[in-house]
Image 1 (cartoon, rainbow, N blue to C red):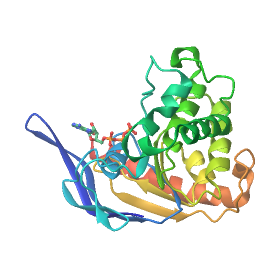
Image 2: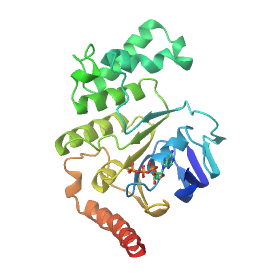
Image 3: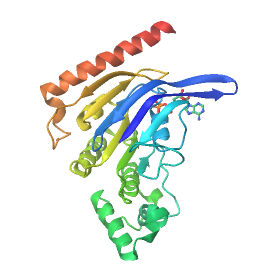
Length: 261
Ligand SMILES: Nc1ncnc2c1ncn2[C@@H]1O[C@H](COP(=O)(O)OP(=O)(O)OP(=O)(O)O)[C@@H](O)[C@H]1O
């Protein structure tokens, strides 16, 4: 679905280069839930920004369904770290926004209304349609963002630490809801997180990135059965094995980074 072919990225702060990503090769399979874990600043958001076509790779190429990405990739939905709901629009109006642009403008009014209502119900915001973002809790705003990115039914969803700032209980609830929505949908999902437990609970495959410049230092196929119960899956012995394996890679990279400073 998405292919990263020898992709690297350097930013410049004035004349000072910051190598964000090392050379990265990765194929994301259609329908896969891929989790990307790594320390702060290792280029995870950069990877998603490039997949969404918001940023060009420095070297190499990124292909989406075999085509080089040029300009904004309208076939993907992107839930960014920042809460970017429009404060002057209600929940319903925010979620409807993608249907007012591009090819979705052509949908009938009835279809638009049906889709908005369906996704509001799916993320558990029924009854809050007329509320404005400032009248919602952090978790509800995340749900609204998720519904807004699902409403135009993209093949691929990019999520950048969507549950990072939420308390542990709410995080678990939203992870469960996300899996319920994703499992059986056939959609490709790239999920960035700092949280190894979250990554293993959700993903078909976890990649671990090194500290900056980010490179892939470990990959694990997570062969835990589906549908998964995020509340209990962490207590399975195989879960512990995956955690140990991936944590060892992260710890080793952290130690070598500290040795170099
Ligand atoms: N537009 C930019 N200009 C300059 N430097 C940038 C820019 N965007 C990112 N960087 C730098 O590139 C590196 C990678 O940033 P990125 O946001 O991709 O990391 P990340 O892994 O997503 O971090 P976090 O987990 O903290 O969100 C960082 O060192 C960051 O400072």
